[in-house]
Length: 140
Image 1 (cartoon, one colour):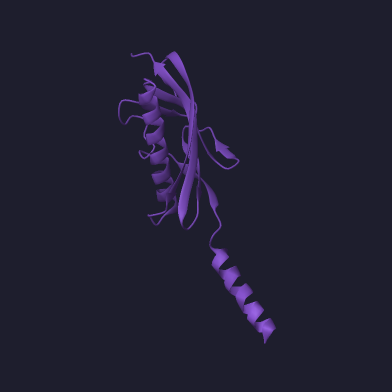
Image 2 (image 1 turned 30 degrees about the vertical axis):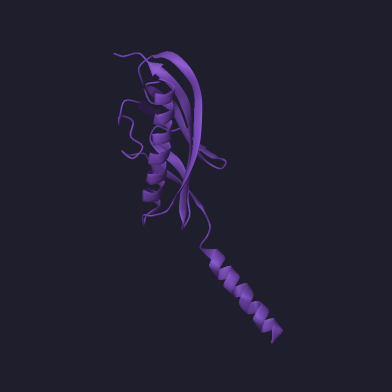
């Protein structure tokens, strides 16, 4: 009888943990990350931008949000939008007008792309880390 009880407990633990794995995704950028929203421009990867007038240093943030949307891509875009908002706030605080060379990461998987970003998503949350350079760009 003890063996059946132990096996039952192990089965319950295995079933509850089966859906908890985090997937590392490469997700296409869209307006959620948005490079042109607000007064601070954000340029992912090696996107073309005006000449750099002044470099003000690097900045990085990690964002983890509760998953409130049904699709993994949607959750990743919500996490990226929050991360980009933090980049813009840091730029405004340091009087920068852009964040360039933005890279995304989840644990050891990094992306330096102008077309997609890396995100980790599970059944309960989405997470992304961003880093970039705060700069003042020449106004053309």
